[in-house]
Length: 542
Image: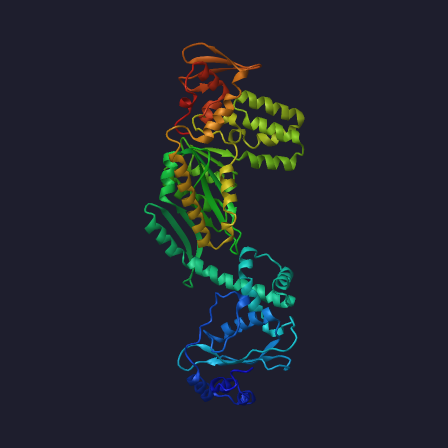
């Protein structure tokens, strides 16, 4: 039953007269139509899922391209073969490509407002569905649907894109369409990235306003054409500076990692170690490339923020990037610069294959005395003189505990702090620069808050991780005999070894106590022998 056959308004808009006079439509006709179309029709909502987008009589759009994009979604969802019979800046006429049914849409600009409106619509489609949609599915439509995918996976090939379109939408597109779609999507992303970088000035000012005392530095290259090009961006929040100075060890890890977005930048970061042996990111910077110049710029700012001066009493651990080594020697001449033993081990494994090489290396690396180190290296020399020489050329003073300075309360030989932080921010590194920087700051806000809530319940005792280390040490006490030689001096004997312990000086001849600030099995044995509180001998900086 046709309940609209007597509707004068719909008959005028959808009647046969208009169909027969498409070629004679002029501006006067458009204005006359506008005068009779109600202003109560809805405005198209872009947030509606693409599968639910349908044309409605009287619906208003901001321009013809928005309507055409919606129609693309409509035909893809329903398998309708439609074509644009008239398609220009002022009007749009859509009909069935086969001409076998009466489906028809007419739209034009309204005369009394800046809206592009569907003026007439016959939506009944009687033809069989077909998903070879031709010109209705444009490369721009494909590209707009896959912008986010290209933002996260910019290396996705056009053939993979073609397969993805077929699987998601059930339509057939050509390789050429996908190639142009990828180019279009990357152009959209570039435009978005330009906007992101343009907002960095405002972002930096907002950090300074909302986080007083924070250091934010943005460097740009001023070109003759009056355009500014990004060079580097550094941020160190005031709360993180204070937290590191007041409650963390005197060791920091330096590292650089690649950003995985469209713009191939690198993220330089410095990560500390808190009193519970957890990571404590302090500052980070986005630079174009990891080189000597950028490391100097980064460390100059970091030294001022953390008050490192010339580095006396501090430790730096890194993968020993060539440019970084030179800058650290120049700016922090008194710092103890350690190499990440994991990187050395990986390089050793590439040159010398075999579990025995790695086992001996770690024995030498974790030896706390020079005697034990030389014993391990002698074993390696007997096994393979070239491997021995390779490790000696790496400067053992930078990777073996036997040569680390005492009193630093950290015996770490790996830069696990930086690697852990890099793993945490993998997803953030795929995003545009401001989004990434915001995710880093939000991660640190949440982390510091959670750690503070936990720490309140610990009281003034040592931290849980340190207590676990102490409990593991206590398990080995049964294998040692304690012989006192004074009120605070002892000889602690094992099955095959013996060590001198001085509780007053807080030293052990094995040197582990001086390195980690927690203790060793010999110091704990002597403390327990005197019925003293073992935890009271843990250094305050731990």
